[in-house]
Image 1 (cartoon, rainbow, N blue to C red):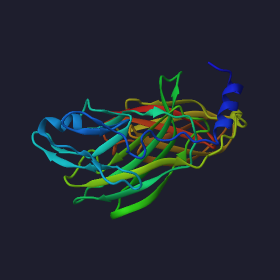
Image 2: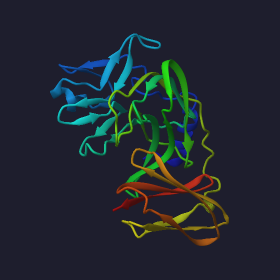
Image 3: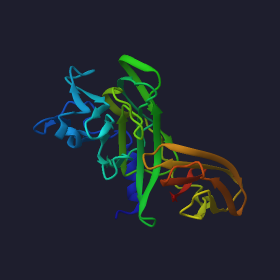
Image 4: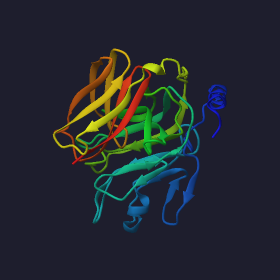
Length: 302
């Protein structure tokens, strides 16, 4: 591993050129025999192709370019409604009742937002979304730390190409090593047939400066959750060297924020009680943020 000083220097020099989203313009498609799929983007076509039904399709012309991405949630015989979803990376299909992104693409920049163009319409009470999550592998915890999150539900409708800008919220002062982009025409847990999302020309833009390691001496430490697994509640315990405001952010595995808490810490040990009785069973990530410093803990609800 390179020395930290060398790493930081390389990061500072590279901020002038933001690495981009693979095939963000959806110009490259692969022929899979009975269907096509956008290069570098996973989707549900491999699962639904046996029924000659496809939720991810190539649209033409692009905006700009020759092609764009068409996601349409559809009722598939023997499977129910399958959401029109695409992930820049791979999708975890081990549990079709709880579809989640599995992995993304290598990325080491700190963009301020993601831009692009879209069209969308929800069927009934459905609600699609666009999400971005930047992460960094935590060697000591053997898990991924969230660096930044961007999430926007699709409300109303956009029946013609409309430019959008999705802001990224940084929860830790570090550089990511991976990014995941999720586009979905539907709520993944209760999709409704005929909801659609068209997308094109996705790109990262802007830059959130890395402010260095100054001030980390007052960072929170010794974070833990108990009980964990939890059912009705869990206690968030941590230690800090100085008084200040603490922000608790709870996200599911797709990066969607499900709970937020604000508190004030005192020097030494601190404990915050988090009510989990209204949370669905599954895996969550609790980010304890003090200024530019944070610690991430994995929480299991059973």
